[in-house]
Amino acid sequence: MDDPKTPQSLFGPRVRLAPSPTGWFHVGNARTGLFNYLFARKNGGKFILRIEDTDKKRSNKKYEESILSGLKWLGIEWDEGPEKNGPFGPYYQSQRTEIYKKYLEQLLREGEAYYCFCSPKELEAQRADMVSRGLPPKYSGKCRDLPESIVKQNLADKKPSVIRIKMPNKVVKFRDIIRGEVEFNLDLLGDSVIAKSLNEPLYNFAVVIDDYLMKITHVIRGEDHISNTPKQIVMQELLGLPRPNYAHLPMILGPDRSKLSKRHGETSLTEYQKMGYLPEAMNNFLAFLGWHPLGDREIYTLEELIERFDLERVQKGGAVFNIKRLDWFNAQHLKLLNTDQLFDRIGEYLKNFSSNSQIIENYSPDYIKKVIELESPRLTKLSDFLEFSDFFFKEKIEYPKEYLKWKNIEEKEIVIVLNDCLSVLEKIKDKEFNRMNLQIKFYSFISEHDDYKQDKGKLLWPLRVALSGKKASPSPFEIAEILGKEESIKRVKEAIKLASS
Ligand code: GLU
Image 1 (cartoon, rainbow, N blue to C red):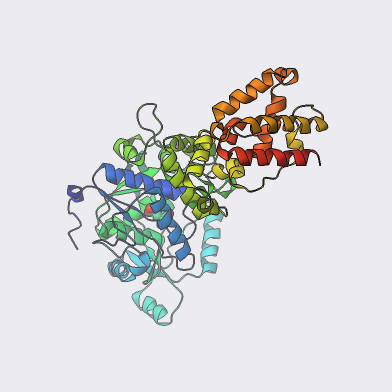
Image 2: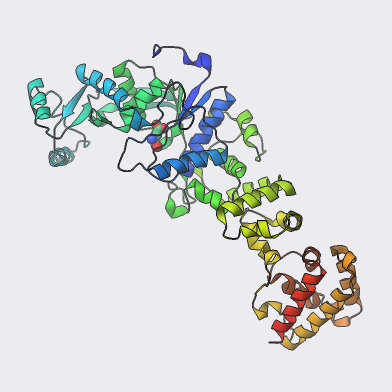
């Protein structure tokens, strides 16, 4: 291994995302991953993915899979990590036990860490005693100076134990790139547990060793870890390791400004993919959760975000996760896609997440693209496509009879109105059956009939419902053009049957 003081910046910054696979990939972690990635790419550095799976009970492969697939979906490519390897692996903490052990043994040997044999009951009594004396509840230090012979005996007797660090009684200061000078009085902490045993290091210890050995230059992570930083700095100092730069990202909040949780809606990234958001919109939205480039522009591709990203412009205050804003970003990014691109995206989306994916096989690409062209101005999410336009892909549409009723027109009149529509449709030649002609023919029919002239909705509303089965849809002429003459006539005839039933 290289000397710890090697000037790492010669090779550009090295940053990491270090998620624990103990839950579905959280949007907050995705945001942390994105900021690390943008920083690395902007500065010609490396982005490392490290799986922090020391908690064997809670770690699960399915969660790890959601992390990897979530990052891939967003296009956040890691340079070193699972599936990629790299010079500083393994990139799974569960495979690094021997490495941590060496450093734990060093701390024990040097008297900077010690075995603690206090039982949970004893610890609780110590805490209660501290609180009753008005002191901050922390470990009493009972096992700090146990004679070596007792420690050996206890270990030989397999008495349950943990390993604690001797926390120095001092104030730790560090400069956070986002928050400026941060100070922390270690006296409040007491001797923290750093490992359950030589083979079971805990997060605060393993992270220090890994960040050092993986030559991490900048630790960019959520603000919820800021209170861990002083502990990690102490361990670096005790082991003589260099201190990385720190940047703690603002918390992501729900609309009520409390920490984002399930209570506010979905927190797992995959759910947003399933809901029909585009990865580029998600990146754009996540990037703006706590950061903003100079100027008013808001729509950026990933490449443009890389170009503009600057850690110094990350805000300190919490960032509100507003789904309406995500919808807006998504609608904007959808507008940047042309019909062919939308066709591919919608097809892929339906294949992965819809039970109606067969439409892709059952209808011609030309037909689907016409529907996409018609519906695309109204789309907010990919999932809207089928929701809005399912009637184009059904042999028989079903809807309540009342939908056909325009304002206060009599029920029996609907049949007459629909028959009028039928007569107009039937007169239009096959090759002239396009929206322009349909409009001309229907409007001239309207102009010849006084009651329609007064209220053209009386004719066009039932026609539109007959074609779409929906209360809201594009105009009947646009729909009829795509459906074609035969299908349009068939649907109006079915509506007549329904209205007369
Ligand atoms: N495993 C920690 C987490 O998932 C990583 C924290 C860090 O980045 O140091 O929150």
